[in-house]
Image (cartoon, rainbow, N blue to C red; front, side, top):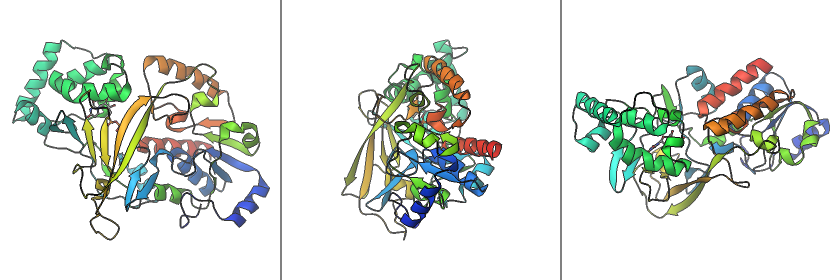
Length: 393
Ligand code: UDP
């Protein structure tokens, strides 16, 4: 793909025609998201022939960004790159320059604003405590009252990490809207994604490296796919045998249950609906992310995209308008976009069975969030694709 071209449009016709005649590739990569783009890049670098297809009209999977009013809008949900892995950071930095954005979401609970993640600012606002000792004592007191020794689900895990008040105001409503299930039926690991610290530090991620690619994620993924044939609006599952005949190996990054025609039943996902609005004002909420943690507000959070890039255009000028997206979480049903795998016990058991079937597909590698049914962060997806490439190439 030539990155100077329209990032969503068709590619050089002559090049396409020449390649179509070959009709045989070492690798067919199904899905032009992060996993697929990293793998494709590595395969090409190793001298392999690669074809990437995607059923969407554009590349970049769910990290796709689109420019509206000079603002890179995260069309499929906000993505903030963060990693502790120097190798992954160095790798991704080949394809983009990252700005120094630091994620510090604000929680809005019925008009009360709290700092996230849970830190001394949050504890001070919640309880009026001033020192780390006072905060720790408060959490310990609430944990003891709740009588939790070894947390078995998200609710118990949350209370044992931050106490009942924070659980009730900042976790319960948000989590139940987000997952559509009671916290007592959700796995504890989901809440362990969030740091808890007894310092005045609103940086959401405990990561060595963090930022947003300057110029947007779409451009970054286009750089990964530079020189690789990409065909858009192509649905692998609708014409599987023809695609299979074109390559020695398939890297499949779609949903694993869809690959097997849902023969053992459908895995559950959460889907997200975004209501995106352009506002004729420079500043709506003063922060990239505000989470609505009560149970009454129908959306989970509002993203104000310009603040991922400090509200400036490429020349450093203030942008006069703003673009916001309200996020509504819903249960996935056929036809919706699957976003978050529901990694509870029932679904994990079903996934294990699909996984067994997948092992028998010798020609196919299942990768990425949908292919592995895993709540993956971007850096872990990149690391997984690089590891797979190293083994296979
Ligand atoms: N969470 C919460 N309150 C918040 C933010 C997050 O209770 O204000 C919980 C919720 O269960 C969520 C989980 O923490 O599913 C992980 O949040 P994260 O921000 O990592 O989710 P993502 O950005 O991947 O949607």
